[in-house]
Amino acid sequence: MDDMTPAEGAGVVTGGGSAGALALDAPPSTEGYQAGKLEQRGIELIPESDRQMRPSSLFWMWAGAMWNVEFLVYGALVVSFGLSFWQAVWAILIGNTMYSLLGLASLPGPETGTTAFMISRAPFGRNGNRAPSLFNWITQVGFEIEGLVIVVLIVEAMFSREGTILDTGAKVVVIICAVAVQFIAPFLGHATITKVLRYLSYVFIVVFIVMAILVIPHAHVTSLHQHTSWWLWTTALVLVVSAGGLGWTENAADYSRYLPRDTPKAKTFWAATLGGAVPSILLELLGAAAFLVSPKVTAAAAVPAAFASWFFWPFLILALPQLFAINSIDMYSSGVTLQAIGIPLKRWGCVLVDTVISGAVTALVIFKGNFYTDLSGFLDYIVVWLGPWVGILLVDYLLRRGRYDVLSLAEKRGGLYWRNGGFNWKALVSLALGMFGAMMWIDAAYYYPLNYTSPISNATNGSDFSWLFGMIIAAVVYWILSVASVRKEALSSSSQLEASRS
Image 1 (cartoon, rainbow, N blue to C red):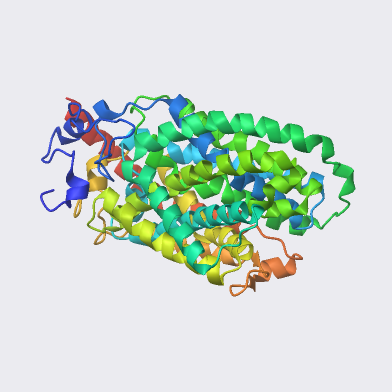
Image 2 (image 1 turned 120 degrees about the horizontal axis):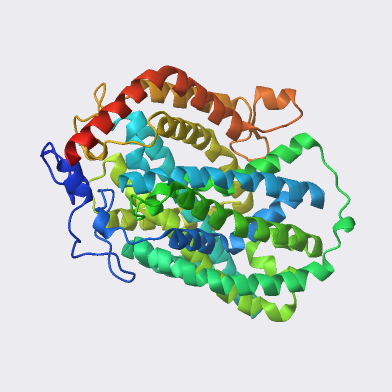
């Protein structure tokens, strides 16, 4: 392990025999786990002594992320597709059951003490894992841009409310300020993000209650008489799934890795699942109801149009820190994903790179793009890779019964997961077939310039089951190709663990 990069090697004891036990049971580090203090670790293994997180903290972290204006907008967008209110309700309720995938994807974190795309090296191999890691980095940056654009639009709405229209120079200043503020929490790291989101969730729960009181008496569900086809309903379902449970799976282990290894799996699962699902469902239902009061609610900056006029300033002022907070999750994960790809930078350096890139693209969207069309298309296409990747990751976890050779995950060369030059072609073939299957059942006809309708979608009046079809194909193919080899690896991991503890 002498050729390990600094980011991977820190905190890992080299050598054979009891190395695994030593790496996971090292004495407390001087860097600790404290909000407001720079987290020095990136993708390297977290010693057991430094895992001070509890399942309740995981619950409130995810809840704090989802108590957010973005999910009001998602609920309104579902209705704006042409669905009746009750069709939207069913899309929201069914789509958010996919937070169970977030719960499942959180389980390897406490077991390994490392990030999602380090764990992804187990099925894909170190070098083979670069492909899904790159897809994930692009996805994370896309979500960062979404949040930053909404922040800029809200600031514009604030000035417009007072009769001031921002010119190009002023918008550039707003973008630079937003990017600078956004950098802070991801730069400091895991403990800071977790604590900030917990306290913000308390505040936004109160805001939600006020919003519900203002909206529900005026939302006459029978006033919306659209009743679209069941097939178009599946397109709305894709938005809920990709913006919700499935869309967060690639972040899951990045945050659960600070849970102690002996944390009961059921507690980890339910903390992540319910922390994400409960606020998402409530806010999306409220967003759907708010659309009945004012269709302008599909634009984040116009959300207060559905409420009383006095609520404009309190709502938008509170919405801004919440948007920065949810973006922090993506920016933190995009940073450690860059490290997993192999970029030789510290975690905070990767965050700086992502901050600059997301700021530049945010400016491009503000001045040249069509944000809500771009957002819908983005959410539709990310499931093409994400569904298959999740299917492979979960099948791999089940086949090896959650047992990983954690030092092999951190090896630069060699180890249990090196295989053929760092590639596991069984996983890569499964991913490619799953992505192909997803593209065969996708309906993205309205998202210029990537407008595309698949053959199966054409044959079924515009249905879209890309996320599910791709996941099933990849999972089944990977199971067939890998059932024997992965179980053999799991036995090897168990033998090494027993030897290290003897």
